[in-house]
Length: 72
Image (cartoon, rainbow, N blue to C red):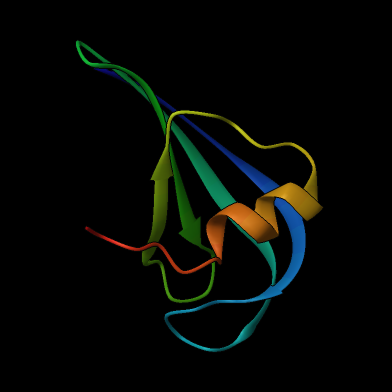
């Protein structure tokens, strides 16, 4: 498994710690099941979401990361 970490700038509120954040960490995780991207709050260090896609547009990122997901 390989890992790469980068910071991206975003203006939003963390859904876990409820603080206004200006950056997120994005960890690229490459393993036998494929590439995944883990989005981590820079303030509280909690995992926000893991996705298959890397989002570069902050509007898309806000919509995807901070929307409520439903489990059926």
